[in-house]
Amino acid sequence: MKKGSKDLALTFADKCKNIMASNWRGYLNTVKADAKGSKEDIHTSRIMYFLKRGKPYLCVPQDDLHNLNVVIDERGSMAVANPYPGPLANVLKSIGKLPTRVALTGDVLSLEEEKVHSLALEFLFYELVKFLSCLTIQMRHVKEILRETIELEKKAFSAASYAVTELLSSSRISSVSRTENLRDVLSAGENAYVVYKFDIRSCSYIDSAGTDHEVDLEELELSKTDPLSMFSEKLIDGINQNRARRSALMLFFFEYLEINAADAYMISADRKGFDVLAKIPSDTTEHDLDVYTWKECRIDFKEEASDVGTFCRLLVEMESEALQNLRSRLQYS
Image 1 (cartoon, one colour):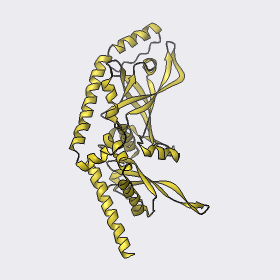
Image 2 (tube, rainbow, N blue to C red):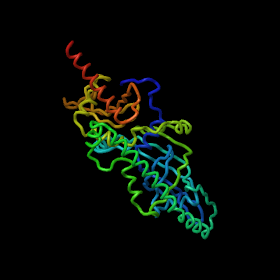
Image 3 (cartoon, rainbow, N blue to C red):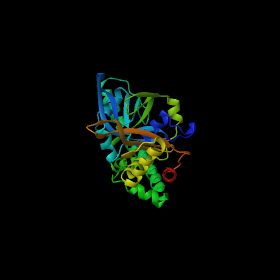
């Protein structure tokens, strides 16, 4: 594995922030409630969200039960998985590898941060009506934020080099980016969604083996939103759909681990490097046939990539270096 400096090491807080910034969908859990109060049952549904200054804002359909639940009990939890696009998802599923994900607990708060504690049925519906009357103003504000985010992505895409845009465009998945999917919120009616602020009380990073790593909230707050996050799915899928780029990933396994890989996929990309999943020979054989297993490897850059163009440049430089080293070995072998 190529080692960078300790300053380039990716922390669990970084990984959590990268996953949240790359995705736009998560599973929200709230406590079921009615006029008599909170219940022990949990309501779960898939919702869209976006980040503003590193904080999650939830876009919940107006007819979702969450809207009633949080009036009585604002406690909630949320799970966000690392998005795996295209053929990568099928590969991971076939080998039983779980997606890395973020688990959050916290409070689901209205943008006015009103907390209703009365359990009277009449008061409950009064508060709901009063709350829904604020939706038009909320959605106008939210749509402005989303328009700014989408415009920022468009500018970054147009400023990228031809090689970068060609790579991103080679992704065979339409509408894979976070902002492209959030266009649904923009095109929806004024009262189609209720937007909440999710006030995080705890955060955990769950790796592909299912191990839970608790993240310090102060560290999460200080971690930077990765500049590659808005492009990560297109970038990863573009590389995985390109046979030449996949061959380069196989070359990295030979260069840094001295292992001949039969195939390889990029499974994550960030400003500090990337993770590769490679199909390599197993130590065991069956009936004189080669048996393969899958191994994950983290490869760090020597410097941070401030944008997707720099990421691609560093990747090409590493490919050239690995090819040159391979030629030298063959020359003197």
